[in-house]
Length: 127
Image 1 (tube, rainbow, N blue to C red):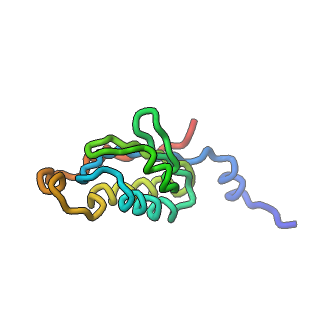
Image 2: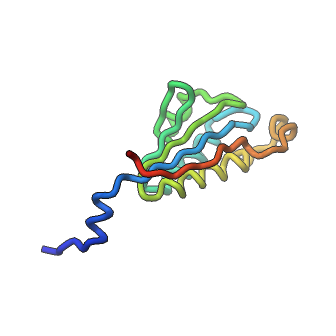
């Protein structure tokens, strides 16, 4: 039977890493099917759990139906929380999608030259 070394034991005992980011949806049509699919593809690249929240509504960021059910409209504030060893990288990747405005062109994007309203990302262990 293989023995766990001290490094493996520390990983098992360490609290999971949590990262979060809040973003303003600046694309013209809100979080419709195409940007939702982009978010799901992005989130699915990571092992951590990722949730999206608008107000009291929450969804698994790896579920297109969950994201669509949030009904995110233009200028909606969406908070993403990731928990797991690659949580900071997942939030950073989601932030890049918002900064690119999901590669959409349109009136809301042309009149709003600033980045997507990204709030600084924090990465902290769970208490």
